[in-house]
Each structure stands twice: as structure tokens, then as C-alpha cells.
Image 1 (tube, helix red, strand yellow):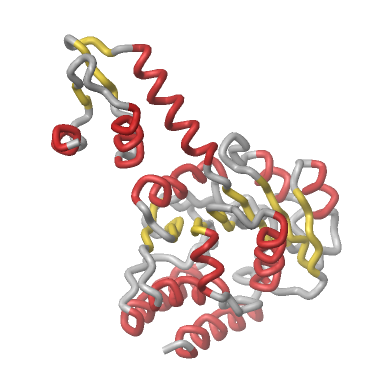
Image 2 (cartoon, helix red, strand yellow):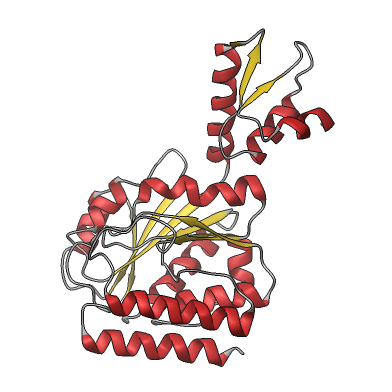
Length: 289
């Protein structure tokens, strides 16, 4: 393993023939963001390349990953979101129909998701409903992904959120829109400013280095339960991040793309929603100081 550690940073990894062990391959896959290419006599070995890819895929498939999607009147976007989720590494897709009055439930079921009902409105309340279901039905879940139903995120980036957990031992991964590429107009000025202010306050009061409160995130299920989440409305995301910081969890961010949502936002798309969300986020930050 000493030799392997010295070459992990190289794009191409060379092995002495007959000296490769299965556990060494697994360590390399776990520690690198890309699959290393073994070279023998300056030629790529197709057999070992396929073996690496197989192990990498098998590793992700062996992790039980569940996606929770809160949805309030998202009939136009929820089907697209579900269809774009990589099914080969996701064990279960749960849509929590949060007091919708449109065809959100019907479309989500047709797209292949498990649909739960939460009749009382509230983003956090819908997330808690999903967590309760996972705890009762899939108690051995490894990772939970939270994803919005409005098609503003890119579900195909789920593997990038899982990688730091699987390979580097992270506890929670935030998909940062601030670090990634945002489509023009995908975030309102008040959203951008609100994120900036909230993350600065998190740094001041909790020593937490975040750039975004984005809803697209992955977290170890065991750690999620330890956070004992309470917020039932707009303070859900910031509560998770500040509690993770207070508990000393290993939190990282990865850049994610972001596009204009389908339909009008129930929060940033209205003056009332913007004010209520801003108030609740600030209230939550100061509540736990």
C-alpha cells in the first residue's frame, strides 16, 4: 500500500504484473475521483480497465441510496425529475406530495416513484415525512438524497454528490450552485443575496464554511437521524447545515449546475414567500447559537 499511496495523484497508475490485490483496487477506487488506468509495458490493459469500471459501479450499487423529493403542485416538473434520476445507483425514489391540488401524485406514480401524502403544507414537514418512511421501511439505508421537484437541479449529478461520502468518508455533501454553473435567471437577486447572508452568518456563529443553502444534497442516513431535524417549513436546509457544523460532521460542497425551474416558485416567486423564508432562515440561525 505504500507504493500505491505514492502514485495515487498520477493520472496513470502502473503496477508490477502479478502484484495487484483486490483490496488494493478497492482502495484506489475509493480514494480517487476518477478510475485509474493500469498500464503494463506502456499499454492499457482492457481487461483491468473493465474490471475497474465494474468494481466502481458495483461499489455504488452496493450502497443503498434513497431519494426524497418534496413536491407541492409540481405536476409539470416532477415526472422529468424522476425520469432523470440514475436508477442504477438509487434504490428508492420517494415523492412526498405536500398538499398538492394538481396531478403531482398521479404523474409521480406513473414515473415510478413511491408517493407519500402530507396534507399539511411545509417543505420541512414533507422532508420529515419522507425520513419517517425510510426509517420504517428501509432502516438500513446508507445515503439519503434530497432533491427538488421543479426540475431546477440536475438529477444526473447524483453520483457526484455521493462520491465524497463513498470515497472520502464525508458525512454530508451540499450541491453548491454558487460554485457551479447557474443558468441566467435561475436564481432571483433576493435568493443570491439571501444565500450570501445566511452562509456568512453560519461562518460567523458556527465556523461553518458553506457557499450555498441549496436543497440538492446528500447525507449519511445515520448522521441525518442524529441531527434530530425539527423545522417544518423554510428553515429546513439551514437547520441541517448548522446542526451538522455544531456536531462536527465532515461536510463538503461540490459544484452543481442549476437551471430555471418549471413553473413559478412558491417561495422566491412571491413577495410573501420571500419574506417568510428570509425570516425563518435568520430565526433558525440565531435559534441554535
